[in-house]
Amino acid sequence: MSDKAARVIAIDGPSASGKSTVTRMTAQKLG
Image (cartoon, rainbow, N blue to C red):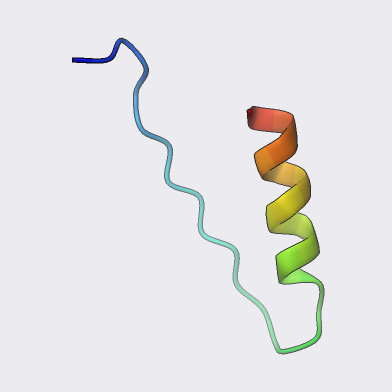
């Protein structure tokens, strides 16, 4: 079993508000 705890992050908002961009940037920062 891994020592890392799973992270769940919910990103909500209307269409074309930049959710995918925020998701990609967050994933890069968190690794």
